[in-house]
Image (cartoon, rainbow, N blue to C red; front, side, top):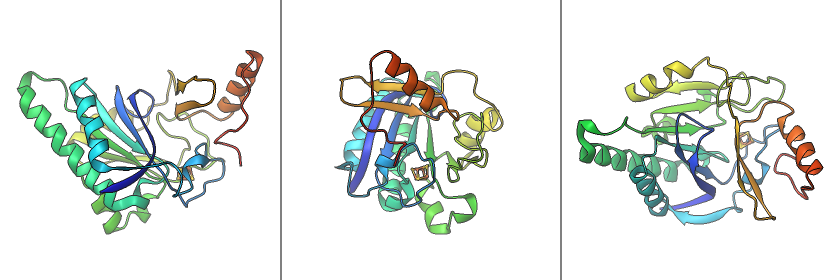
Length: 225
Ligand code: SF4
């Protein structure tokens, strides 16, 4: 099945526990004020691919000992069929790898999805698309509700477990505030710098100031109109 993505990254360490494969869907019509990922809004931008290609990346990440998979965007539920196929396939590969390792293997990797939809907007159809996931982080980004809650951009966003594995994995983090690194940088080829994670209010502007002082200036920013 075809899927349109903004990108992927491994190892991702700022959106969920441990070292994870990150997958960012392309396309979002929710248009939250203050969104840091405006480049993911246009459903025709990003790059076309297939779910099979993404699952091949997941297979590699599992072989390297990934702790989990994080799907974000963009809005993953606006490509619901591709999301469902991706999650089902990722769960199957994870379970096969786990069986192969036996009980001596490391902790089973979890599947986490970010959505801008609120819990009450998760219709039966959207919940079906999420059914392969272990947990979901729900809710629009609300710029007027800053938070230090781990992996969340605004105080309204909720972690909801969808499986017993998700409940066990995320229970320690429901109300935990972040104390360590919230942003991960990647790129640095002189043209494009990618940031992975959830910044605190004012953190992006502060980073811009520091980089400018070091001689690095942005021509475009995904968090500005
Ligand atoms: S914060 Fe997420 S849901 Fe909101 S506009 Fe940006 S990509 Fe869409």
